[in-house]
Length: 622
Image (tube, rainbow, N blue to C red; front, side, top):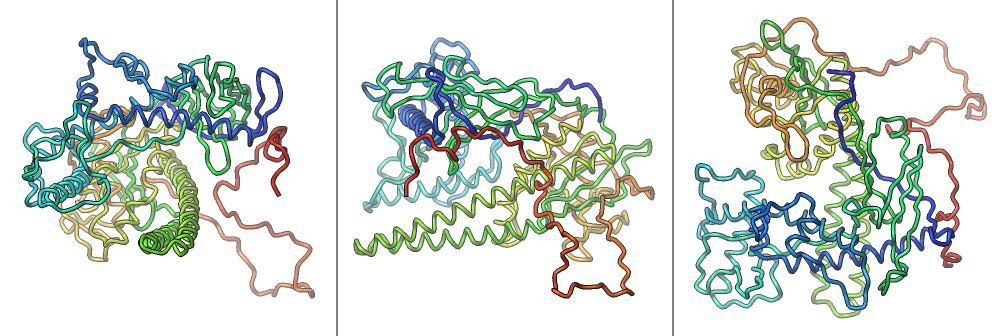
């Protein structure tokens, strides 16, 4: 570690579920089924109000205001979304004869403003890219000097939207009939004008996001972070989390009396016990297949990590064969050195399982799409049967996606724990990972590119930043271009004499595993650019420029030896005595460890009064 004082603060998230709900007015317990119904009423009110607000604000004037950052009187907009919306007069509307507290309106306006602020960057990029788009050839001209940088993947997506819109304009100009509303059509503004092109097919020089996109869909969730104690209050005592929130008692509440406070009790996850938590934040309420889920956040005190004084760095290369590989580079009086002997992560076969599940999900998607095409012109009776089959396929695809999500999370945190232990054993104070915004899978075929694009790299990067922060190790993102193709010693292109996974430099006589060489390059970029690191708005560290310095191969071993399982010696000269019945009852053989999470101790049994085992909403249906 770089220091022992817990001076840095880091926010992280976790999830939990309530096991008890009590009405604070009467003191009566509420069944979790009834609680889910009341939560659904709250989410329906929030979703309908936010959808209407985004639809009314979907015009260029909204994004011009947010891009300028000032209101009509020239004052700077506050950072809090609900305060900025109140200053700009953005107020959601509700149906008549329905009473909604003002704190619920805060939840609606805070999330709507945050969504529009995020889309403001996309609006600016679309305006810049549309000015360089040629509708005849369908290509983008090179950017001018001083233009805002746009990632290449983002530019390709916008170009596809511009091509689709140009073809739509050409069909409209030629008199072709277009059935149904197009998703890329222009949106009409409040003053009655539209961003569509003229009837002669002329392409505007500047398009906006409202011209090629529709308002975003709203997720059914209640973000309580924008409220205060009048709507929600959170307290944590020991390993118990208590949330008091006001919920409606009817689908359409007509007065203040139909909003009553409910006290929810949940258990903190075991991995949070004993940690230096400095603050607990109000959660986000969502409903999934199992009921109410609390997505909570907390601020934790972690050791200080100084990037400017780092002398040993670990480079993590995202590998196509496994999730990642790591290598070490250190700074010495003679320059940068490395032993070029890295560590390759063993995913324990989970990568093959993820590839199989991904292929299964794609097959279900293709079959569902084919049945939808058949159902369009099918008779009513046959269409009903096809719709039932489509519903089954969609449910199976959702289950496959949920299983992939669980495996990805397990894989990400296991990878983060392994790499953090590797860096701690090597006394490294910084971990360099490839910047995912500059890393695009290409050149390996359609199947492999798609498989690499859907891997758990983003989850692994977030898990690595969270796990390394608790150990006092800083995680910094460095550019990925050329890390696997250039020599760490002379910065010349590498050859592949032994195949794709082998790299060799004839001039420097350096070589080894391709992923380990890339890890050395990434660690070198982190050590050379540690003085130019910048912190993004999300709080992560980035190095956006690359420098070169020769890395010398040292004979001494600089990296730690990864732990390997030791096999017990077995005397094979003496045959084993087997039971006559074929079953050895004298020894109990425990089952193999199926997952890294099997070592977690189960939570202590709590009172299940009011849980789903004891329904408060009447007897279950037969």
